[in-house]
Image (tube, rainbow, N blue to C red; front, side):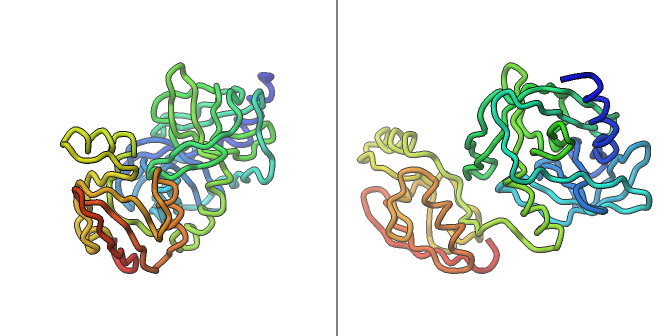
Length: 291
């Protein structure tokens, strides 16, 4: 990785990197289409915000968010916006691949750091608990407040958005394969997030332990830790302490079958088998409407 390549990336990609200011928790983003930028959903505090683009501030508003992949899409206002940066399409990364991380933390100035992919792209659970495939772990260091900035290849194409700082200075980036199509859909004003059940869940190992602690038979399933008021789960009668053991007649021993059923269900009903104490109940969650 040469200094000249880093300088080229800075000049080609750097102008499209934005810093999030008022209306946000700070962080960075990148322009991916004319007047359209992406960042992490967790960076957003308000629908209207101010972003730093180069040496000037621009008004922006949130066009859409998909918390399942921690993605927010912004529409930027004002003239003379930089050219967008293209997503990488179809190119995989492997251990040792050269990458470049860019950020403008809260609009305090551009950072560009080179690094390499330190682990073969793999699956990792995102903020909502759903598995995100193709997650990239890399060594390009970044200061705090850089989340949402792009990770690019040596041609300046976006491989992903930097999202998680790990022990030892490694960074996790949500991959372009999970973000690119969702970003385009959100920019058009359509929703991309699947239906929500409206529960906080505890995994099967902890669920068995908690049931055993109160003298109940340990069973495989997902323990309901909390229920959102007015959600499909609340309307179905699911309560804190219930254990979801099956969804649409498919046994649930980890969250993935439940998420798969939600992804496929859209506005249909979801049949849930739960255990409440020692009783087995069949409940129907209606996913249409507000959740």
